[in-house]
Image (cartoon, rainbow, N blue to C red; front, side):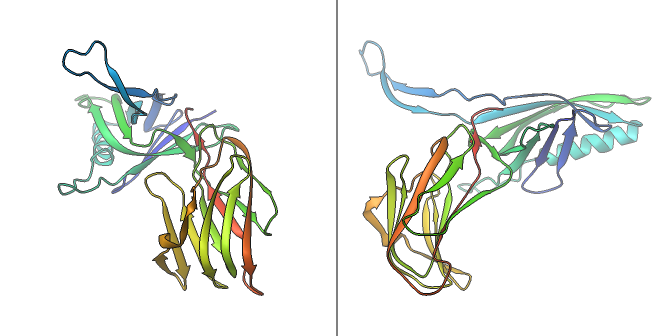
Length: 281
């Protein structure tokens, strides 16, 4: 069974490492397990002990040990240059945001493929031998700001009828934020996760052919109204009294929507799109 690690940088060509390669031979991959939470504490002058302030989950660090297998010295230099290029982080101006690449781990067999956004953290490369053919060791490391792996393919669940509880399964082992689209013609729509009791309500009318898209990802939450391919901020129509843009709990989730009025045309349904997350591999 072959396992494959693919690094796709934000800029430049991808790098593919496998356990049966003839160029980039994957020997080991570390940093795939759970990431431990870290307590934040503070200590005042003369204070015995410390005060707990918060608990954070730090970034994940993934490390790969690889052999570069060259047919000759020139080929080894070519392989080495490709690794150097793939692991070079594109600079950004002060205050800018680093562009994330993507690590994909294909475990082989029946195991599902997983991915995680990342940036290069370090690379250690030896100099090629001066004669003959052979192999050259490389140690590659990535920093993953979001510590959970995720599925490489979207899961989509459609709730076709109002007031009809529908199963929305989170097959991962961590909370998973869905992107939820509400298609018109609908008015005053409430979407509820009956399993957790969480809900949100979108006011106003969503016209036939239009939809409202709700991104529930922490740090990226948004409510947008889309018509004719043009999106408009619709956050002001989120009812502040019912505004829990929920994530999916691990396992089974029973979700439904209700609307105060439905029109005579349009899809008139609610669609969940998400990628289950994994705490470790």
